[in-house]
Image (cartoon, rainbow, N blue to C red; front, side, top):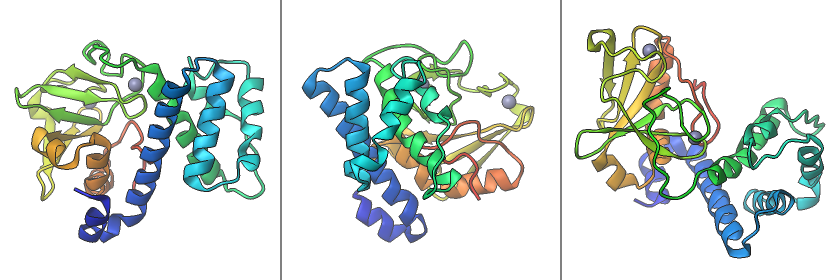
Length: 245
Ligand SMILES: [Zn+2]
Ligand SMILES: [Zn+2]
């Protein structure tokens, strides 16, 4: 399904979907440039990422070039610890704190994606968190074999998990879980033990939308319902939102 069609169908999602589209283009650009130039050097990769960000978001490169120095000055390698970028002490006169946070979240994203190697197999079974980058996941797919595959919101790693189990507190008692469905049968699974929720979709949703992170956005109304009821989303969606009002 094309993005324009989706926006026509769900006009209330226009701005998150447009941002989604840019973030996807940005990540694709970073991935293909890194591959094309075959660079592994952190400084060069920061350049690729900032150039991609500048191009896709239409922001002059000169106005974000300082971020390169800030990242290098921090003294830790974002290729190993991408989360340092989100913690940079950036002061801006033009941007609000929320805008700065959003920008740093987006710039961090390709570094997380670079952590993951293609075809890497590792499950979420041990901790319920992403085995590659340690992030909580709020999104899962039930595949055609009725297995649950958790999806990391940051590095995009996919790995198996228990079919009935809260990834946050490991509650496995289905009597202490509740499920709600939206009109497309995408689910929110509430854990009554720790108030965490995750969203779950099926393979047919995947075939329709092709990208788990798009399904996560299509089902934003489920987040609103879950959060109004007091349930907690433990990790952001692809556009950096965790609290959805
Ligand atoms: Zn991850
Ligand atoms: Zn729980």
